[in-house]
Image 1 (cartoon, rainbow, N blue to C red):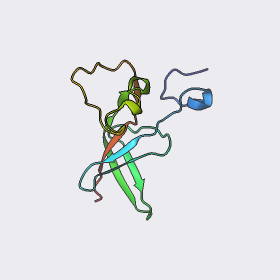
Image 2 (cartoon, helix red, strand yellow):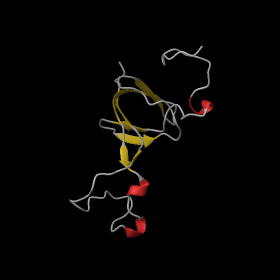
Image 3 (tube, rainbow, N blue to C red):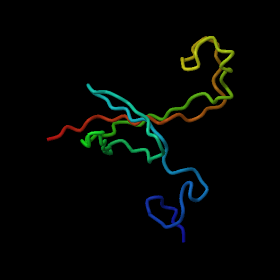
Length: 123
């Protein structure tokens, strides 16, 4: 019997094991504050929710705790909607804002979600 409640665990294959999309995604960790920095995950992982804790283990083994403050889902124009690189007047990594008469995109692709966190102060 299969439960339709996603909160109940079951032994049936899920995600890419069942031929579907993988559970999780690569995402960008964005640390706010004085020591602000950001980094992309190298592989897919579940996207944390606002209010959850994220633990970072540094190269020296020190552990730092962060609280997720917001998740920003990113979309961008699909590749087949963008001009060819050879036709561009600016670099492919620049933001294109060349015309006031730009039409809205017809196709989008997902970018990496941004997981914004703030340090949890140690007592």
